[in-house]
Amino acid sequence: MLFNFRLTPLAQVQPWGELPSQRLHWFGLTDGQYWLQVGKDALFEYSEAVRQKLGCPRYCDYQVVRLYEDVLEIVSDVLVPVPADLSPHLSLDRRMQWSRAYNAWAEDAATQTPEEEYWQSIDIATSWIGNRTLDSGYLTPSTRIQLWSDDQNVYVEWDNRDKLVDGVEAWTATSGSYAVPKANFIAEVQSFHDRLMAQMSERIGEVRAGRLPVEIDIGDLVKEHEERAKPITQHFLPREKDWNKVRAVIREIGP
Image 1 (cartoon, one colour):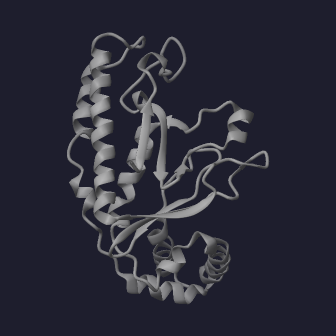
Image 2 (cartoon, one colour):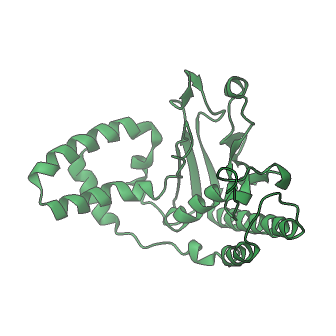
């Protein structure tokens, strides 16, 4: 299974805020651990050294819905095949080279290009990669994970070699790549949705039975769950992309 999670037992979920105004909501009730199983590697799995140093659990300890939302945010772009001549620019191994070239170009272009044209170029140069990057900026340290596809497969690539805690590698999966057929990837995203919504439905039943020691608006909780549990098929519709514009900006930037 690609997307994995465990919800924290309801009695152990920490409420938000300070007494006497502590509260919880649907988002907060998804507290748990999550990870991506990519072959023999697990993304968002803390290294043994960091677990001993910080006393943290094995996997990322956060609201599971955050990973879920971030996956859904990029799926439509991930499913758009990246042309073969552009895919090397997604390589995490080339990120430093690309970053230097981009920064130098952006600095020069800022003084030589009309403002509107400049910001359009910035957007074209960065968004096609950003829309294939799994956000984890809310973590310290974060991870570096990209997802993209060709005509056949979706590729999960990661490079966490510089993600350290006091000089120690934070994550067990330092760098690598994993491929999954597109149809299987879509099924994995759908499974993530189905499993999270099913478990949250059970959790709401527990809340209704009075097993949550914090006040919560049941009506709002149920309403939000019904909205989130709706079909997600619209996320599987690839977004159109003008790759010629990307090519033109990359040629302008450099290597």
